[in-house]
Amino acid sequence: MAETTDVKDVTYFAIEGVIGAGKTSLARLLCEKLNAKFIGEQPEENPYLDDFYRDPHRYAFQTQLSFLTSRYKQLLELPQQDLFHPYLIADYVFSKDKIFAYMNLEERDLLLYERIATLMEAELPKPDLVVYLQSTTERLMANIKRRSRKYERHMAGDYIRRLNEAYNEFFFRYSDTPLLVISASEIDFVHNEEDLEDLLQQILHPPVGTRYYVPLKR
Image 1: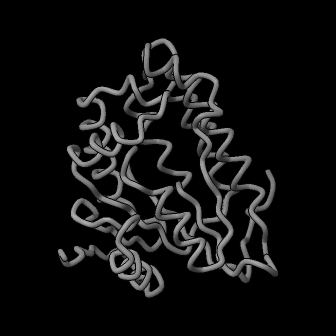
Image 2: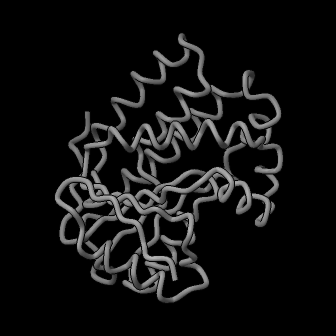
C-alpha cells in the first residue's frame, strides 16, 4: 500500500452538503476570495448516473464504484505544496461516499464496497476543516429545480428527504477532522456579499472539534 499523501504548506478545506445545498458554489466563491485551488466533483462524467436515477436498484453499485474511484484518483493527486495557491478547497469529502452506499447498495455489494473504500481512504489526506452546509429539504428541492441539471431531473422529493436525513446523521457522528456546521437555509452567499464574508470569517477561524453556526438573518 502506498504511503498516505501529506498535503504540506497548504490549508485544505472541504465543503459538504446535500445535492442542492450550494457546496460547489461556495467552494468556487471561496477560491476567488482566497486565491485557492479548486478540487471539484464531476458528477456529469459518471456514465451510470442518468441510469441510476431512472433505475436505482439496477445501477446503484456501478454508480457508486464510479464515484468512489474518481474521487480517490483526484484526491490522491493533491499537491503536497503549491507556490501559487495557499489553499485547496474541495466541494466534497471522500468519506461521505458511504452515505450513498448505505442508502443504495444491497448487503452483498455493501460488504465489497466497504473493503474497497477502507483501503482507498487510508491513503488519502484529511482536510484541515470540513464545512457542512445544513439545509432543509424544501430549500434543497427549490435549488435543484432552479438549476435544472439533466441528471437531477428524475430526483424525487422523498429521495432528497431521505438523503438529507442521512447527511445530518453522518455529520452528527462525524469526528475525523474539525467540522463547521452552517445552518444555510436562510442565507444567500451566492448573491449576498455580507453572507459570504460572514461564512469566510467562520471558515478562517475553524473550531478544534465541531462547531454549529447559525448566521444572523438579514
